[in-house]
Structure formats: structure tokens, C-alpha cells
Image (cartoon, rainbow, N blue to C red; front, side, top):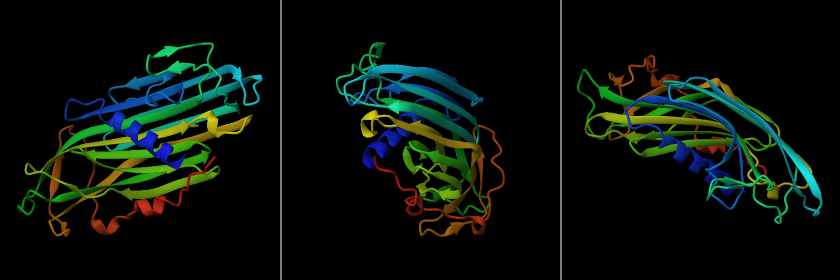
Length: 303
């Protein structure tokens, strides 16, 4: 299950990060509640509710639906799903929320698939086995780095650090950020472990190399998500519910530049194609670095 979860989340991030921007800057938000069946493309869903904005505006989705099929004992049964999600985006500031509740989860391989992502067709006599709610927030910008003293040149590197505030609770709830710069990327994945985890951390990306033009195409994608993965992995009659609540904001706190020997560079500035004011870049001493090793403390619960 651990590999399946990471693979899906990374695939979701990769797909959503590349789908929106032909221009050098912009904002995007999506709120989705949907269902699907495993064995098909997991990135395509039958949407129970969806709202999106190409300007980063606040969006929300909410839906509830019941499905009837055969449970694990071969008897006719009914499961119920309800989900909520929301998102908003500004340059360097993202808010997302995803929550779901699956009542009386069951699985039987004899059930007809409700949704085929191969054809996009819905069979109302079928039953889904995967239930998803997520809020996605994204900003995309083009940074031009400058140095009045001329002490930056091709090959310098930059990292970005993000302040993360939110809560993971219940089962099947996930939080993820993908930061992409000129096609290279770094990410963070957190998931719940059946309890409640308050997240108040600072995460620092790896160092990205800046090209000869001293410019960088920068994109950050944030997802808060409920995803039961598949009813096949839960016992008959299980209540599966979880929430990823990061509407208290995830913010770009700052960045650092490094020379070829990984020494910090000072006396630089940058401009953004969006014209957004990202605020003053803090001094390195104010940073708290959280590596992916620390994130491993949020262990995934096996089913």
C-alpha cells in the first residue's frame, strides 16, 4: 500500500502541475469530489462535484451519494460516500482542504464497475471502489535574479522554504506539495495515521540550478486530499473517514542562493513576471530546515 499511495499522489501532482500554464505566470485552483474504479487510470474520475478557477479564486465542492452492490459475503448491501473540498491561491500563498467519509465500505470483485476511465462512461448499476475528495492550489511565476555587485552567475543554485500549517486527521487523508523549477522538481508527502496530527513546520526544497539567463520558471502545487485508495483494502462494514485541513495557509517563506561550492550568496534580489510582492527574503539564520527524513515520522497505516 505504501508504494501505491506514493505513486498515485506523485502522479496526481505531476499531472496537475503541467496541465495549466502556457504563460510564464498564473494561478489555478480546483475543488473536486469524485469516484472511480481501480484497474483504470487513477487520475480520471467520475466527478460528483467540481469547481475550478483560472485566477486562483476560492472554490469549493461538496457531494454525497449512495451505491448499492454485493458486499464481501455476496449479499446486496449499500455504502455511502460524502466529501468536501476547497482551495484558494495567491502568489506564494496557498490554502487547501479535502475531507471524506465512506460508510459501510465493502468490496466484491463480482460488482460491475461504476466508472471506466478508459471510456469515460458511467454505469449506474455499478459500484466504485475508490472515493476521492481534494482541494488543489497552484501558482506559477517566472523569477529573474539580479545582483548589484555582480556576484551571481550561471550555475548558482537556489532553494525555497515553505511554512506549512494544517491538520491531518482520521484515515486516508494526505497532504502534498510539488515544487518545480525549469522541469526539475522536489516534493513532500504527508499522510494521516488514524489519529490527529497538527502540522506546524518549515520545509526546505533541494537546491535547484539556475541557468545562464539567471532566470527560473517556478511552479508550486499543493493538494489536500481524502483518498481511500480502494475498498478492497478495507474490511467489510468499515467506516473510513479523514480530513486534510490546510486552509490555514501554506506560504513561500523565502529562498537562498548558493555558489558552486554551496556557499551562501548575499546582496542579491529578484523580480517576478507576475509583479507579485513575495515580501523580503529572510536572512539564512532565520530558517528552520525540515528534511524528508523528519517527514518519515508520519508513518502510513497499512490495511
